[in-house]
Length: 376
Image 1 (tube, rainbow, N blue to C red):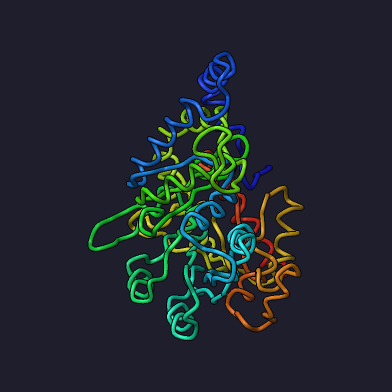
Image 2: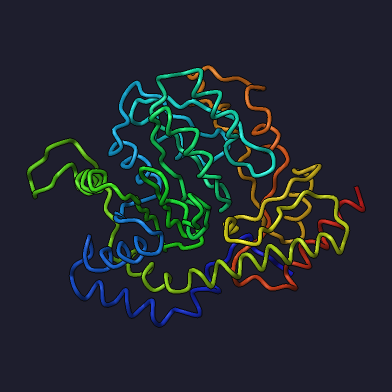
Protein backbone atom coordinates (compact mmCIF):
# COMPACT_ATOMS: atom_id res chain seq x y z
CA UNK A 1 0.00 0.00 0.00
CA UNK A 2 1.14 3.56 -0.74
CA UNK A 3 -0.08 6.34 1.56
CA UNK A 4 0.84 9.91 0.60
CA UNK A 5 1.32 12.62 3.21
CA UNK A 6 -1.23 14.68 1.31
CA UNK A 7 -3.13 14.09 -1.92
CA UNK A 8 -4.71 16.92 -3.91
CA UNK A 9 -5.82 14.69 -6.76
CA UNK A 10 -8.59 12.85 -4.88
CA UNK A 11 -10.27 16.12 -3.99
CA UNK A 12 -9.84 17.50 -7.50
CA UNK A 13 -11.52 14.52 -9.17
CA UNK A 14 -14.74 15.26 -7.26
CA UNK A 15 -14.94 18.89 -8.35
CA UNK A 16 -13.02 18.93 -11.64
CA UNK A 17 -15.94 19.91 -13.88
CA UNK A 18 -17.03 22.85 -11.72
CA UNK A 19 -13.41 23.92 -11.26
CA UNK A 20 -12.65 23.92 -14.98
CA UNK A 21 -15.85 25.80 -15.75
CA UNK A 22 -14.95 28.54 -13.27
CA UNK A 23 -11.39 28.81 -14.58
CA UNK A 24 -12.64 29.00 -18.17
CA UNK A 25 -15.09 31.70 -17.14
CA UNK A 26 -12.26 33.77 -15.63
CA UNK A 27 -9.99 33.51 -18.65
CA UNK A 28 -12.84 34.10 -21.08
CA UNK A 29 -13.82 37.26 -19.22
CA UNK A 30 -10.41 38.83 -19.75
CA UNK A 31 -10.32 40.03 -16.10
CA UNK A 32 -7.65 37.95 -14.39
CA UNK A 33 -6.43 40.27 -11.60
CA UNK A 34 -8.53 41.65 -8.71
CA UNK A 35 -11.91 40.97 -10.26
CA UNK A 36 -15.24 39.60 -9.08
CA UNK A 37 -13.81 36.28 -7.88
CA UNK A 38 -11.39 38.01 -5.51
CA UNK A 39 -14.24 40.18 -4.23
CA UNK A 40 -16.38 37.06 -3.73
CA UNK A 41 -13.80 35.14 -1.72
CA UNK A 42 -13.07 38.24 0.34
CA UNK A 43 -16.76 38.53 1.24
CA UNK A 44 -17.07 34.80 1.94
CA UNK A 45 -14.04 34.64 4.20
CA UNK A 46 -14.86 37.87 6.06
CA UNK A 47 -18.30 36.51 6.91
CA UNK A 48 -16.98 33.06 7.79
CA UNK A 49 -14.21 34.32 10.08
CA UNK A 50 -16.39 37.06 11.54
CA UNK A 51 -14.38 40.14 10.61
CA UNK A 52 -15.28 43.37 8.87
CA UNK A 53 -12.59 43.15 6.21
CA UNK A 54 -10.74 40.40 4.32
CA UNK A 55 -8.12 41.44 1.76
CA UNK A 56 -6.82 38.97 -0.81
CA UNK A 57 -3.06 39.09 -1.40
CA UNK A 58 -0.51 37.01 -3.26
CA UNK A 59 0.52 34.65 -0.44
CA UNK A 60 0.36 34.01 3.26
CA UNK A 61 3.92 35.29 3.53
CA UNK A 62 2.91 38.60 1.95
CA UNK A 63 -0.15 38.75 4.20
CA UNK A 64 2.13 38.73 7.25
CA UNK A 65 4.34 41.45 5.82
CA UNK A 66 1.51 43.74 4.71
CA UNK A 67 -0.44 43.26 7.94
CA UNK A 68 2.56 44.09 10.13
CA UNK A 69 3.30 47.21 8.11
CA UNK A 70 -0.33 48.30 8.15
CA UNK A 71 -0.34 47.83 11.93
CA UNK A 72 2.49 50.33 12.17
CA UNK A 73 5.41 48.01 12.86
CA UNK A 74 8.58 49.70 11.64
CA UNK A 75 12.36 49.51 11.74
CA UNK A 76 13.68 49.03 15.26
CA UNK A 77 10.40 47.77 16.73
CA UNK A 78 10.42 44.45 18.57
CA UNK A 79 7.93 41.68 17.84
CA UNK A 80 7.43 38.54 19.92
CA UNK A 81 6.88 35.23 18.18
CA UNK A 82 7.74 31.55 18.31
CA UNK A 83 10.92 29.86 17.05
CA UNK A 84 8.83 26.75 16.25
CA UNK A 85 6.96 27.82 13.14
CA UNK A 86 7.37 28.24 9.40
CA UNK A 87 10.06 30.68 8.28
CA UNK A 88 7.63 33.27 6.88
CA UNK A 89 6.32 34.23 10.32
CA UNK A 90 9.72 35.61 11.29
CA UNK A 91 10.98 36.78 7.90
CA UNK A 92 8.04 39.20 7.70
CA UNK A 93 9.33 40.88 10.87
CA UNK A 94 12.91 41.15 9.63
CA UNK A 95 11.88 42.43 6.19
CA UNK A 96 10.58 45.53 7.96
CA UNK A 97 13.91 45.85 9.83
CA UNK A 98 12.08 45.08 13.05
CA UNK A 99 13.57 42.61 15.53
CA UNK A 100 12.06 39.20 16.37
CA UNK A 101 11.94 38.37 20.06
CA UNK A 102 11.55 34.64 20.47
CA UNK A 103 9.85 32.90 23.37
CA UNK A 104 9.62 29.16 23.88
CA UNK A 105 6.56 27.03 23.23
CA UNK A 106 4.33 24.91 25.44
CA UNK A 107 5.21 21.22 25.15
CA UNK A 108 1.53 20.21 25.39
CA UNK A 109 0.15 22.30 22.53
CA UNK A 110 3.30 23.49 20.66
CA UNK A 111 1.99 27.09 20.73
CA UNK A 112 3.58 30.08 22.44
CA UNK A 113 4.21 29.66 26.14
CA UNK A 114 2.01 32.33 27.72
CA UNK A 115 4.21 32.43 30.83
CA UNK A 116 7.21 33.19 28.64
CA UNK A 117 5.22 35.91 26.85
CA UNK A 118 4.48 37.53 30.23
CA UNK A 119 8.16 37.42 31.13
CA UNK A 120 9.26 38.93 27.82
CA UNK A 121 6.81 41.82 28.09
CA UNK A 122 7.99 42.65 31.61
CA UNK A 123 11.63 42.61 30.52
CA UNK A 124 11.40 44.67 27.33
CA UNK A 125 9.22 47.77 27.00
CA UNK A 126 10.25 48.17 23.36
CA UNK A 127 8.01 45.28 22.24
CA UNK A 128 5.28 46.67 19.97
CA UNK A 129 3.55 43.56 18.65
CA UNK A 130 3.20 39.81 18.96
CA UNK A 131 2.53 37.12 16.36
CA UNK A 132 0.89 34.06 17.93
CA UNK A 133 0.84 31.10 15.54
CA UNK A 134 -2.11 28.70 15.69
CA UNK A 135 0.24 25.86 14.88
CA UNK A 136 -0.94 22.78 12.98
CA UNK A 137 -4.51 24.11 13.27
CA UNK A 138 -4.57 24.23 17.09
CA UNK A 139 -5.92 27.50 18.51
CA UNK A 140 -3.90 29.67 20.87
CA UNK A 141 -5.74 30.70 24.06
CA UNK A 142 -6.52 34.16 22.71
CA UNK A 143 -8.52 35.26 25.78
CA UNK A 144 -5.46 34.79 27.99
CA UNK A 145 -3.08 36.24 25.41
CA UNK A 146 -5.16 39.40 25.05
CA UNK A 147 -5.25 39.73 28.83
CA UNK A 148 -1.46 39.58 28.88
CA UNK A 149 -0.86 41.97 25.96
CA UNK A 150 -3.55 44.64 26.41
CA UNK A 151 -2.04 46.30 29.53
CA UNK A 152 1.18 46.85 27.59
CA UNK A 153 -0.54 48.18 24.47
CA UNK A 154 1.02 45.37 22.44
CA UNK A 155 -0.73 44.71 19.13
CA UNK A 156 -1.64 41.18 18.09
CA UNK A 157 -1.27 39.76 14.59
CA UNK A 158 -2.70 36.22 14.46
CA UNK A 159 -0.87 33.85 12.16
CA UNK A 160 -3.82 31.64 11.26
CA UNK A 161 -2.15 30.28 8.11
CA UNK A 162 -2.69 26.72 9.35
CA UNK A 163 -5.91 27.20 11.28
CA UNK A 164 -8.70 28.43 9.01
CA UNK A 165 -11.98 27.46 10.68
CA UNK A 166 -10.55 26.75 14.13
CA UNK A 167 -12.21 28.36 17.14
CA UNK A 168 -11.31 29.82 20.51
CA UNK A 169 -13.34 31.38 23.31
CA UNK A 170 -13.11 35.12 23.96
CA UNK A 171 -15.37 36.92 26.43
CA UNK A 172 -17.47 33.79 26.75
CA UNK A 173 -18.15 33.49 23.02
CA UNK A 174 -16.76 31.10 20.43
CA UNK A 175 -14.91 33.04 17.75
CA UNK A 176 -12.75 31.97 14.83
CA UNK A 177 -9.00 32.38 14.86
CA UNK A 178 -7.87 35.39 12.89
CA UNK A 179 -10.66 37.58 14.26
CA UNK A 180 -9.31 38.45 17.71
CA UNK A 181 -6.18 40.54 17.18
CA UNK A 182 -5.76 43.86 15.42
CA UNK A 183 -5.26 41.72 12.34
CA UNK A 184 -4.96 38.08 11.30
CA UNK A 185 -3.69 36.30 8.22
CA UNK A 186 -4.54 33.19 6.22
CA UNK A 187 -2.55 31.18 3.73
CA UNK A 188 -4.19 29.35 0.85
CA UNK A 189 -1.11 27.34 -0.09
CA UNK A 190 -2.32 24.17 -1.86
CA UNK A 191 -1.84 21.86 1.14
CA UNK A 192 -3.84 24.05 3.54
CA UNK A 193 -7.30 23.01 4.75
CA UNK A 194 -8.62 25.54 2.24
CA UNK A 195 -6.01 25.63 -0.49
CA UNK A 196 -5.65 27.17 -3.93
CA UNK A 197 -3.67 25.60 -6.77
CA UNK A 198 -0.85 28.08 -6.32
CA UNK A 199 0.05 30.81 -3.86
CA UNK A 200 -2.59 33.04 -2.31
CA UNK A 201 -3.19 34.64 1.07
CA UNK A 202 -5.44 37.01 2.98
CA UNK A 203 -5.32 39.70 5.65
CA UNK A 204 -8.21 39.80 8.15
CA UNK A 205 -9.13 42.81 10.24
CA UNK A 206 -11.94 44.80 11.85
CA UNK A 207 -9.94 48.00 11.44
CA UNK A 208 -10.92 50.32 8.59
CA UNK A 209 -7.46 51.88 8.76
CA UNK A 210 -5.60 48.57 8.43
CA UNK A 211 -7.96 47.49 5.63
CA UNK A 212 -7.32 50.65 3.65
CA UNK A 213 -3.56 50.46 4.19
CA UNK A 214 -3.28 46.81 3.09
CA UNK A 215 -5.39 47.43 -0.01
CA UNK A 216 -3.09 50.32 -0.89
CA UNK A 217 0.13 48.42 -0.16
CA UNK A 218 -0.86 45.38 -2.26
CA UNK A 219 -0.91 47.53 -5.44
CA UNK A 220 2.45 49.29 -5.18
CA UNK A 221 1.27 51.77 -2.54
CA UNK A 222 -1.35 53.20 -4.86
CA UNK A 223 -4.91 54.23 -4.01
CA UNK A 224 -5.34 55.75 -7.46
CA UNK A 225 -3.65 54.33 -10.55
CA UNK A 226 -0.19 55.80 -11.12
CA UNK A 227 -0.42 57.84 -7.92
CA UNK A 228 1.77 56.37 -5.16
CA UNK A 229 1.57 57.61 -1.57
CA UNK A 230 4.06 55.00 -0.35
CA UNK A 231 6.36 52.37 -1.80
CA UNK A 232 4.23 49.26 -1.64
CA UNK A 233 4.32 45.78 -3.16
CA UNK A 234 2.94 43.79 -6.06
CA UNK A 235 0.86 41.39 -3.97
CA UNK A 236 -2.51 40.80 -5.56
CA UNK A 237 -4.51 37.58 -5.40
CA UNK A 238 -5.19 36.56 -8.99
CA UNK A 239 -8.66 35.71 -10.25
CA UNK A 240 -7.93 32.09 -11.10
CA UNK A 241 -6.79 31.29 -7.56
CA UNK A 242 -9.80 33.16 -6.17
CA UNK A 243 -12.13 31.22 -8.46
CA UNK A 244 -10.62 27.94 -7.25
CA UNK A 245 -11.10 29.01 -3.64
CA UNK A 246 -14.72 29.95 -4.30
CA UNK A 247 -15.39 26.46 -5.67
CA UNK A 248 -13.74 24.86 -2.65
CA UNK A 249 -15.03 27.17 0.08
CA UNK A 250 -18.52 25.61 0.54
CA UNK A 251 -16.79 22.31 1.43
CA UNK A 252 -14.52 23.74 4.14
CA UNK A 253 -16.56 22.81 7.21
CA UNK A 254 -17.18 19.31 5.84
CA UNK A 255 -13.44 18.86 5.26
CA UNK A 256 -12.63 20.10 8.76
CA UNK A 257 -15.10 17.61 10.25
CA UNK A 258 -13.47 14.86 8.23
CA UNK A 259 -9.98 15.85 9.41
CA UNK A 260 -11.15 15.72 13.02
CA UNK A 261 -12.62 12.26 12.36
CA UNK A 262 -9.29 11.15 10.88
CA UNK A 263 -7.49 12.41 14.00
CA UNK A 264 -9.92 10.51 16.25
CA UNK A 265 -9.35 7.35 14.25
CA UNK A 266 -5.57 7.71 14.56
CA UNK A 267 -5.98 8.04 18.34
CA UNK A 268 -8.13 4.90 18.44
CA UNK A 269 -5.61 2.97 16.35
CA UNK A 270 -2.66 4.00 18.52
CA UNK A 271 -4.58 2.88 21.58
CA UNK A 272 -5.66 -0.37 19.93
CA UNK A 273 -2.14 -1.28 18.82
CA UNK A 274 -0.57 0.04 22.05
CA UNK A 275 1.99 2.09 20.14
CA UNK A 276 4.43 4.03 22.32
CA UNK A 277 4.04 7.48 20.78
CA UNK A 278 2.63 10.77 22.01
CA UNK A 279 -0.33 11.60 19.79
CA UNK A 280 -2.51 14.73 19.92
CA UNK A 281 -5.63 14.80 22.02
CA UNK A 282 -8.75 15.53 19.99
CA UNK A 283 -10.85 18.19 21.73
CA UNK A 284 -14.64 18.14 21.79
CA UNK A 285 -14.84 21.55 20.10
CA UNK A 286 -13.22 22.98 16.96
CA UNK A 287 -10.19 24.43 18.69
CA UNK A 288 -8.06 22.01 16.65
CA UNK A 289 -8.73 21.56 12.91
CA UNK A 290 -5.75 19.29 12.22
CA UNK A 291 -3.97 20.95 9.34
CA UNK A 292 -1.21 18.54 10.31
CA UNK A 293 -1.31 15.41 12.46
CA UNK A 294 1.93 15.56 14.44
CA UNK A 295 3.15 12.92 16.89
CA UNK A 296 6.17 12.85 19.23
CA UNK A 297 8.29 9.73 18.92
CA UNK A 298 11.57 8.10 19.90
CA UNK A 299 14.08 7.41 17.10
CA UNK A 300 12.20 9.87 14.88
CA UNK A 301 14.58 9.87 11.94
CA UNK A 302 14.88 6.08 11.89
CA UNK A 303 11.09 5.73 12.06
CA UNK A 304 10.65 8.16 9.20
CA UNK A 305 13.13 6.22 7.08
CA UNK A 306 11.27 2.99 7.85
CA UNK A 307 7.90 4.50 6.91
CA UNK A 308 9.38 5.89 3.70
CA UNK A 309 10.66 2.42 2.80
CA UNK A 310 7.08 1.21 3.25
CA UNK A 311 5.70 3.93 0.94
CA UNK A 312 4.21 6.10 3.68
CA UNK A 313 4.60 9.85 3.32
CA UNK A 314 5.73 11.87 6.34
CA UNK A 315 7.22 15.27 7.05
CA UNK A 316 9.14 17.04 9.80
CA UNK A 317 7.78 20.36 11.04
CA UNK A 318 10.29 21.87 11.77
CA UNK A 319 13.79 20.29 11.76
CA UNK A 320 15.69 23.48 12.71
CA UNK A 321 14.05 25.98 15.10
CA UNK A 322 14.21 29.51 13.72
CA UNK A 323 16.50 30.85 16.45
CA UNK A 324 19.16 28.42 15.19
CA UNK A 325 18.82 29.31 11.50
CA UNK A 326 21.99 30.81 10.02
CA UNK A 327 20.19 33.85 8.61
CA UNK A 328 19.01 34.81 12.13
CA UNK A 329 22.38 34.29 13.84
CA UNK A 330 22.74 38.07 14.21
CA UNK A 331 19.98 37.95 16.82
CA UNK A 332 22.41 36.27 19.21
CA UNK A 333 20.37 33.23 20.19
CA UNK A 334 22.08 29.89 20.81
CA UNK A 335 21.35 26.21 21.35
CA UNK A 336 19.61 25.71 24.67
CA UNK A 337 17.79 29.05 24.69
CA UNK A 338 14.43 27.47 23.83
CA UNK A 339 14.65 23.84 24.95
CA UNK A 340 11.07 22.83 24.20
CA UNK A 341 11.23 24.05 20.60
CA UNK A 342 14.57 22.29 20.23
CA UNK A 343 13.18 19.01 21.61
CA UNK A 344 10.17 19.17 19.30
CA UNK A 345 12.42 19.70 16.29
CA UNK A 346 14.07 16.35 17.08
CA UNK A 347 11.02 14.33 18.13
CA UNK A 348 8.01 15.33 16.03
CA UNK A 349 6.76 13.66 12.89
CA UNK A 350 3.75 14.52 10.73
CA UNK A 351 1.67 11.60 9.50
CA UNK A 352 -0.65 11.49 6.46
CA UNK A 353 -3.85 13.45 6.97
CA UNK A 354 -6.32 14.78 4.42
CA UNK A 355 -10.10 14.48 4.14
CA UNK A 356 -10.03 11.65 1.61
CA UNK A 357 -7.61 9.32 3.44
CA UNK A 358 -9.18 5.92 4.09
CA UNK A 359 -9.39 4.05 7.38
CA UNK A 360 -7.46 1.22 5.73
CA UNK A 361 -4.62 3.60 4.89
CA UNK A 362 -4.57 4.92 8.45
CA UNK A 363 -4.47 1.38 9.83
CA UNK A 364 -1.52 0.59 7.56
CA UNK A 365 0.36 3.65 8.83
CA UNK A 366 -0.13 2.72 12.49
CA UNK A 367 0.65 -0.95 11.87
CA UNK A 368 3.97 0.01 10.30
CA UNK A 369 4.82 2.31 13.22
CA UNK A 370 4.09 -0.55 15.62
CA UNK A 371 6.15 -2.89 13.45
CA UNK A 372 9.12 -0.51 13.57
CA UNK A 373 9.16 -0.34 17.36
CA UNK A 374 8.71 -4.09 17.69
CA UNK A 375 11.83 -4.60 15.55
CA UNK A 376 13.97 -1.88 17.15
